[in-house]
Amino acid sequence: PRYPMNTTDNKYHLQALRHVYALAVQQRHVQAFDVDSKEGISVLVEAQSRENNPIRFTTPNLLTNADGRMISLVVQSDMYFP
Image (cartoon, rainbow, N blue to C red; front, top):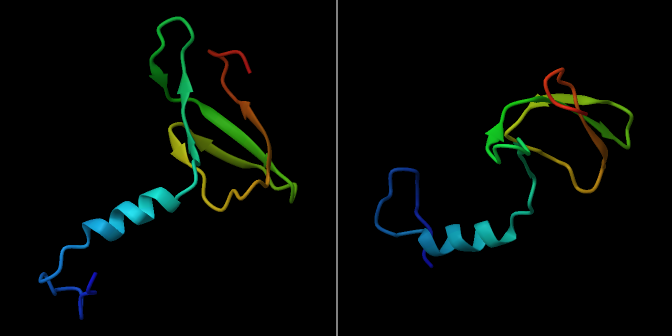
């Protein structure tokens, strides 16, 4: 494919490159589900990494720079069992 010369160049369609990028991306999406209703829920999660710096986020979330460094994921919610 031919690459655009600048950001406003609309001559070339980069859909093929988007497909290649989508195939190269690792699965880093974190989603929590309710067991009874099987619906996605939003809960606070704490992720422990090998560097011992916990990361807190709300699901659904996309983990960045994970690369196998995550040791554990713990749900930090009173409504759902950790």
